[in-house]
Image (tube, rainbow, N blue to C red; front, side, top):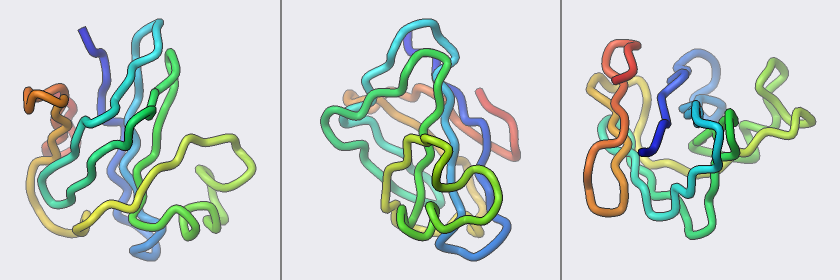
Length: 114
């Protein structure tokens, strides 16, 4: 089973520095190639995207802007950052991570991961 949970959907700060953080809570790497985020934003993970065991991945609307952040998470911290996503975290709605078959893996609604 895939054990991935939303850690944060950060709306504060400049729009291009916002991000979604996903954590692999398992003791093994998780290949999220072809998985998608849907809801207020949309993003499909490229082939070869793997979240390391007990590791995080950050999804940003602008990877370069994310790396320009002055507060953690930021450049120089060896973060796995992918993007760009389409949409805006300011919009209301449930954020859903689905696998390649379209099955829900995790969801974030009002700050609670399911």
